[in-house]
Image 1: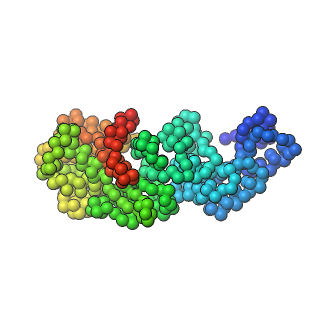
Image 2: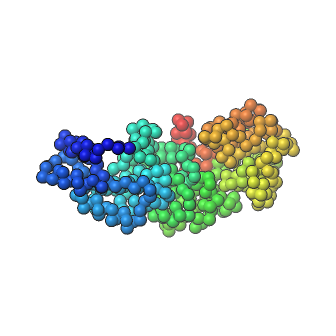
Image 3: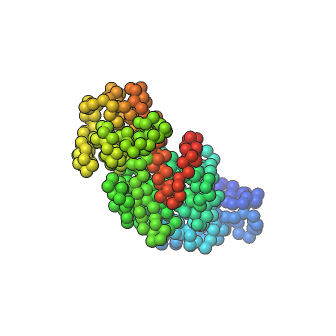
Length: 440
């Protein structure tokens, strides 16, 4: 944003050196001219960072390597390259340069798709990373806050042997998984970090980050069905559902194994709601048996709930904006289908169960709801998989209509227990999970 005189800028940096600043940062374009201007003077304290910024893209490995050499040739103490991520896989090239760099190296990839560069540089040997002092006041696109770097990602604990986990989605910024898993890892002393992974092309992402460093991923909208095709092996339940929400890299052979923990998470939460919270009279017969169970949505989470409800003996109806998708899913699990537009006038009986598995009503569009309030009186329990906000418009109106409500946070917790067990091979510390989530 500076549009003043170039010499004034360089004067300020020379003055900083004279006053003993630890570092100054000079753009590659003016580095030779700057070094000429200080030739013969000795500044024992100041290290000079020479930096190059690319606001369009991230160059090839070869071009990045040549750029490092050009920056080194200026006499830089520290090489700094900032590029722009068009895809999360661009960051892998920066990591490759970073790991092999023989000089102190700062490598950052700007933008939301480059966020992992700002955290994992601590693992791959970067000299430093940047965080903002307060939220929303960034000096470059995609910067996390200092507070998040230190306390969410535990940056000071990251080391070359830290294992990487994360949530793959698009969008992904709303997820509470990083808060939950990083806090749990810290509490139990597991050397891992859990990241937001904004992924456009899942297959390409998994191909690119195929090293043993990347050990486990949670998968959310819209990748749950694609994930099934990208795994080397898939758990039979996930295969029946047709969706995967958890991918683990098997340490023995590096193969990707897909699981589905959505259905246990959601169905258990709904059963607890029907039984009256946690009195868990764990009769073998599910309170869902014989109930009419309406699922809104035919995507990954819809498939998991439909499968789970059917397995518990419910009669399942799928309502979806695209009727054809509803029909396909209904056929696959042995249920009925409905266009979402017809749901408002659908009441073959009272005491039905409703489960929204779409993102309708999720932040920022919190005033949306998949079904009119007048139709909610025919349901004894309403569940919403959306958990940002915790009480969606659908749940608020359901409660006003006299239904028991079950929030997406309950499903979120349930599916997270399962993912944790798949990731670590340890039983989930459920009390710890609940305690962490109560603070958010």
